[in-house]
Picture 1 (tube, helix red, strand yellow):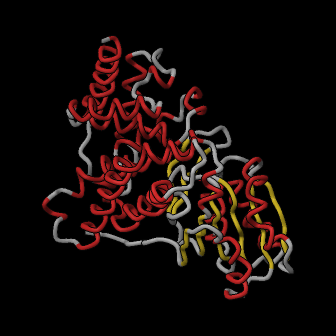
Picture 2: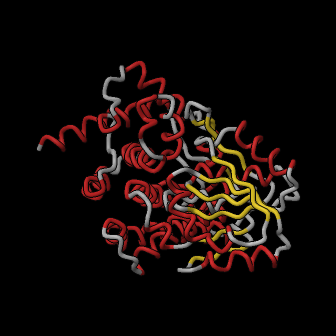
Length: 367
């Protein structure tokens, strides 16, 4: 068994006021010149939390993120950081920005990465890998990095002031960790490996925390109420879910749910949907593939409460022909990460699962 454990950032903290300690942390790590990669609206919201840094003696260069985690954007940021002899790249924004910044830092050995997420929409701030896209938003797969994230700081008040739909997408992406990994991690051959057992425990923790606190946390962000439930779900989305793949490597990272996400991005209609929303649909396909219709019934209420897509129709893809569905299914089963996990799949059974799920949801919705 080949298992490489990549647990997470070198330094992590989540608490109210954590960004007030940023100058002290920079001094501690001998960081005096930085590049800040930022979004647009999120940057406006984040700036008040970074007032001490922005008013300090640290040399700061600002650069706006282009919106997609592409190889070209990674190279641009890495080259920029090298040209000005930056000690660190600070990323302030969402998941794709996080993926781009940590990749750029990984390509520049002398440069540290410091991540300040403004969203809790996935585990991107935690993991030492980046999901890569074309400039048009088509997923190309993921690359694993040679070094982990340097410092990850979560200010709960900053995340609380983020769009609700991104948070819901994070909830969906996180509960998927259990459904995607358990088929592999529950196999008898994996019961004697300490790290795979910890990965499975983290995946179960993801499911339990989302089931117990997820809807409350969504209500909290809607009502702008900073509660312990909200913070617990934020840390589950970003940190605990990141530990699943970090501890379990290819055996626990992703299976059908994320493979569906990666391959469905070829359809332009899906670009309007967030990563976690597409993964949510992928989980439904996985449950259909495994014949777990009772579980689908249980998940349906949860999905409808959070307005998550359950079918191709929900993703505006009901027009797909049988031939297109077969091609789509064939691309899913060829997914590199799905193959790496050892999850047994076939194109015929995948096509059947997609078609059967569509019909099942249609009938269920008509009742």
